[in-house]
Every structure is written in C-alpha cells, then in structure tokens.
Image (cartoon, rainbow, N blue to C red; front, side, top):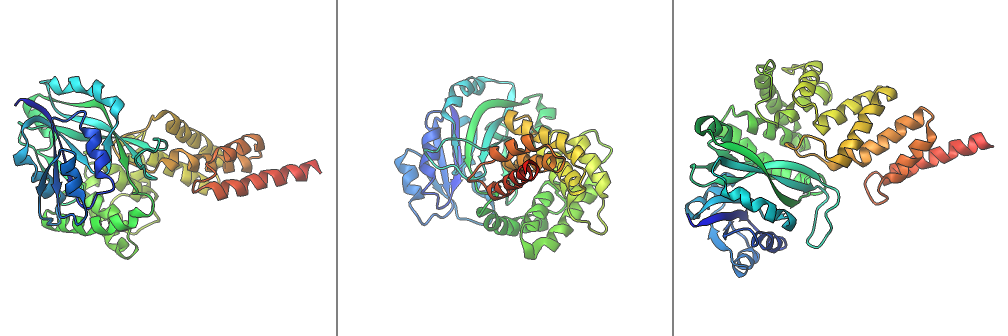
Length: 388
C-alpha cells in the first residue's frame, strides 16, 4: 500500500467540532474518512470541504458497526481511529511519524488528554487526565470492531501478539479530548450508553468488559441503579473467580472493584468490601480512583493522620502524572478535591498554616471554591480567637 495512514472517524451532528478534528489530522493523514451516521446539520459538508471522504451509514444502535463501515474503504497500511471531539496535538506529530515505518508492531497505544471540563478550539490545554488508548491499528491483520458501545478491536490485540509475535507499543502521538463526561453531559450520555449496553449484554452475554461498562453506566441513572447493581454483581462473580491471578484481565476491572470496595454496603456481593479493596490495591497500586477511595474512607473514619499521606500522594500524582493511564477519571481527585480534603485534615489537627495554603491554592472558579472559602474563614476565625 502506497499510503501510510488513514484517519477514520464516525460523526453525527458534530458541525461545531468536526472542523478542528479534521484540520488537526491533515498534517499526519494520507486520507481522512468520515462515516456520517445521520447528521441533520452541516457535519458532512464541512468534512467534504476540508478534503475528507464522507461515507453515509444508517445508524442502527451500534458504534462498532459504524466504525466497521469505514473498513472496506481503507487504502493505507495503518488507521488512526479518531472521534469528532478529539484533535491531534500538532507538536506530537513529527515524533510519531517514524513509528508508522515499523514492521514489528500490530497496534499503537497513544496518549489522550481528557479535558473533563471541556476544551473548545483556541483554548489552552490546562486541567486534564492522560490516558493511553489503543487507536492506531494495522490494516493487514483483519481488525474490525465489536460492541454496540465502547467498541473494541477484534481480534483482541493481546491474542494477536501471542499468535503473530508482533508488539503492542505506546507511541508519542497525543490527542486532546473535549469531553463533558463528568458534568452536565454525564446523565445524557449515560442514558444513551446504558440503553446500548443493555442491548449488548443481552445479545452477547457473559462478556466481562461490557458487563462492567453496563453496570457502571446504569448506576449513574437513578431509576436504573438497581439494575446496575445487578449487572455489577454478575461481573464481580467472574472477577471473584480470577482473584488468584497475578494480573487483571484488563484495566476496566478497576471500576468493578472500586464499586465493591467502597460503594454503600450491599447484600450478597460476590466479593466482600475488604476482599475487593485488597485485590484492587494489588492489581492497581497506582490507580488514582482506588487511592482516592482509600483516603476518603480514612477521612470518613476521622483517621486524619492516615488520610494525610494518601492525599499528599494524590496531589503529587496530579502534579507529575504518575498515575495509571488506562482508565480515565475526573482530574479533580488529584487536584482540588485532594487539596481540600488534605487542608481539612490538617485543620482538624491544628496545622493552620499549611491548611490555609492549601485552601488558597484551590481554583476560585472551580466546584470546590465555596468549600475552600468556608474553610479559610474557619482558619481566620481560629486565629482571631487565639489572638484575642
């Protein structure tokens, strides 16, 4: 194949974002394919005007099917599978190009910076969580996608590694992801994804990856939470049978263990809270959500001395990026949440100076601003009392 790289994406009613996504890809891609699944705005026309090839695919409640619609049109050695709310960071392109010439690799993981508060064109990249996602696939190995939602490559890349001797490699290409998973868009996406994931586990039962996604998504919808608990219990039954394995089958297991270990008590969980917490800490020692829940449990038990080093570690993780990058999470737990809770712990132990410093570091426009201001008032009130 004379072409090295295709960028392929699916889109529907993304007129406000697709231009920046396509423009970011033009410096790297030999061709760009957009699968339009039924836009009623100008998404398709914008894509054409920017040089992309547009393919129409009738939406059938299946993201994998939409991705697979692009596969017969691929004419390159590699494909970068992009979403319309993602854009390639220009500074990472030149370093990545040589990776496309390697013959010993079957797929590349790349870095995605999830801007959980949203990132609009022209804005500076600021607070984000970095994750590693498998998005660059060899086109001569027969990859397709499976899963109505949270679709994944098939055959599984790890299986192909064992079969072919080729490698999975993390490459230096970086994406910026304009997402609102943790704010106003969370409930809307949970409703859509919950419906698709229920269909997925009904049509193809027993697949642990989608069971965990389904359970976690339904737990975000108040009226579906009992069903989410039921699905998560089914997933935990599978995980319980793997507890003696040295490694988890995949990173998403972290979410199920977090639920079992730290959610409000439930009857008849296949793993007890202590078993789940122990397994989570063994399998995912650097997972920020697991570490955050340990700090939260110590804090709620008024064990402030135990919570303090855990919260310090979380703040350090946020500053250095030294956390597991396989499951996305809200950056606030390694940022302002950790600072606020560490400040409160120190305040309770009478360490006013450092507590005050932490409260002043919290963003004045962020979701913890009011709590930080209230605690600063407490610090000042204590000082006035003892100076009187």
